[in-house]
Length: 320
Image 1 (cartoon, rainbow, N blue to C red):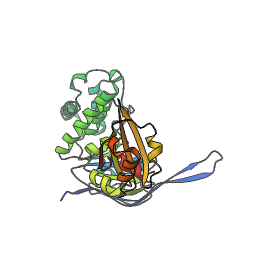
Image 2: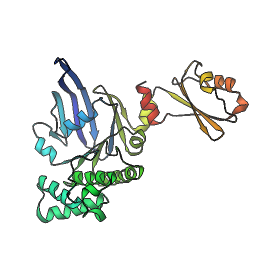
Image 3: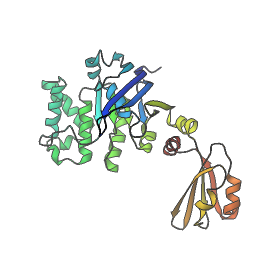
Image 4: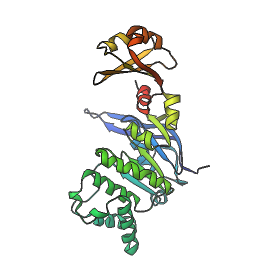
């Protein structure tokens, strides 16, 4: 069995702020979070804005302390043994902050290596290794202010790999990247896992989570509401069934005609040239096929299939 690299038990974290009239307000970002993450996988942590994802990452990476509960990373207590945790983890954030534009890629990484107590020939060797891994070898001598956004993100990746961490936290690493930059990162992540690393990934892109993650947890209001493989999430936690149709002749009022059918939650219509495609979300395990055929006309339906929801459809069904 895979070793458990992250253990969270009943973790609570509350933030206190003041409103416009100076009154204190408490926001409970984590409300009894309990979560175990096995090693050697990509673990996706998903949830809406304000659900507790970033707070979780910051506690696990020792940037925040929990109010209560137990948290261990790689066997170490994140508060009492924070320095030991930091030596064995990497943190990769989205965006452009944290880099020095007037230094080259190599100079940036040499500076960060020094901060990680990596010096001399060891630093030079490791910097070259991570530049190669991140695909920045040909740009290492250029000023970072001349880098594209995708290149800056890859430099963040290189920075996060400097200390050869066992556990890597990636907090929305592809946000703002163009499709090519995101695809390059998608290709890198499985390579890191093959090297024995564990990756905790937060993202708002469901297709990215589905493609990369071995296991997924969905967090809402500081608690885990779904946990399992992407297939498990789609099958066990989705609150919809999906019916897809292709019509021979378009039906402009199809949404209005089908929505009143008992058991149908939503109808989506898309035109592909002259072909109309309908996606129907239903209450789980409810058969509306006969009613749909009756309204649209069986002869006008080119094809009709029932399928499992996508991860995005399953995710959205949990919050609507």
